[in-house]
Length: 163
Image 1 (cartoon, rainbow, N blue to C red):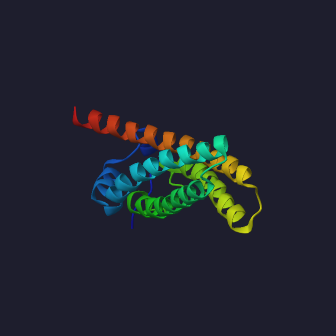
Image 2: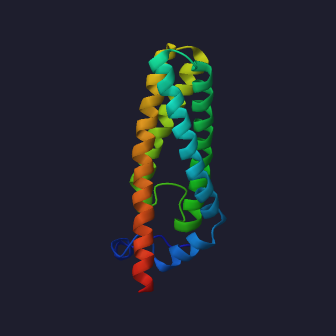
């Protein structure tokens, strides 16, 4: 049985020694390391396509396709991320070390899902869809920033542990 973090362990860094070992041995660590930059690249391309559609009124089909691809990658990274969290912390979601990142992730997923629902059911105009995509992307950027800060904290913790 895996033991979750105690209050003392939470105050000593992002990972306990046991969690760091589980993180380093989890196959989901590599999967996340591949999916996260891939999703960011798709986001950048899609952002350009969405902005182009908003500014010129052209390319809506390609912009919509790019948002769908971004959303599918988001769903994939959320599922694999929860498997990673289970491997490392013993919980699929809302482990104390990543609680707020998970909370914001649900907001990101909700907005991306709302986009798909509106697209598939014709609930918004083309321009409305593009604005909804931008709202989803803004929350994604906030969430990505949260995870980058955690990655930096983990690196600093590892550097401190080796010195």
